[in-house]
Each structure stands twice: as structure tokens, then as C-alpha cells.
Image (cartoon, rainbow, N blue to C red; front, side, top):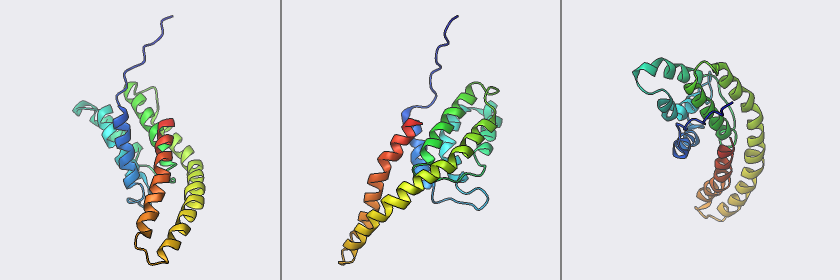
Length: 172
């Protein structure tokens, strides 16, 4: 019984990081009432999907993947979105290699199953704990008339959340 050689990955770490950066900067900017964050999530997958389904012969599968990832999606953007993005990229890559082996519903169900619990975790930690503490600190600075306070607020929040978000992406 011969062991199967693992297939060479289509996405590099740089490709995954590129998708994550697109997600990071667009997750809270492009909402629709019908699909919430799906436009941003799908946009973050586009560079990877183009690698998975290159050429005109793969266009129908590329379009199907876009449609699959434009379904309703809503989670805490920074801590919830990264792991879901990483897992979705992995499943989409496997599906592109063996199209019939992974039904599209598996990818959609994974996203649906994780978006609620990860949103609860991210909202509790980031929005419910970290942000109020940092905001209170920066308000005290701002009350003295220091104009650096709002910039400091954003800088501290990014400095705290960014490393955890990257770590969670890598763990997925």
C-alpha cells in the first residue's frame, strides 16, 4: 500500500496573507442587508480563486466558487474572519484539485457553523473587553486637550488585535 504524495500547495503564505489583508481592510466597509460581510469575504478570496481556477476552461467553476462565497456571512471581522478565511481557502484549494470530492455545501456549512461562535469570542474579547479599556485610557488623554488621543486609540487597538488575528489565521 503506497502512501500518496502530498500535492504541492497552490497558495503560498504570501497569497494567504494577501487574502487576509484584503479581508482586514474591507470586512467592516462593505455590508449589505441581504449578505452582510459576504461581498468583502468573497473579494478577499478572489486572488486565490483565480489561482485555483485559471484559464477560460475553468471559468464556470470560478464563477460557482464566487457565488458560493457570496452567500450570507457575518462574524466578528478580526478574530472570527481570519480563521474562517483560512479554512475556506484550504477547502477551496482541495475542491479545485478534486472537484467532485468536496461538495460546495461543505464549504458553506463550515462558514455558517463557525461564524456565530467565533463572532461571540471576538466580540467578547475585542469589543467587550479590550476596546473599552483602551478607549477609557485614550479618553483620559484626550480630555487634557491632546489631539493624539484618537490616533493613539486606533494604534493601540491595531497593535493588540493584529498579532492575534494573524496567529488565528495561521492556526486555521
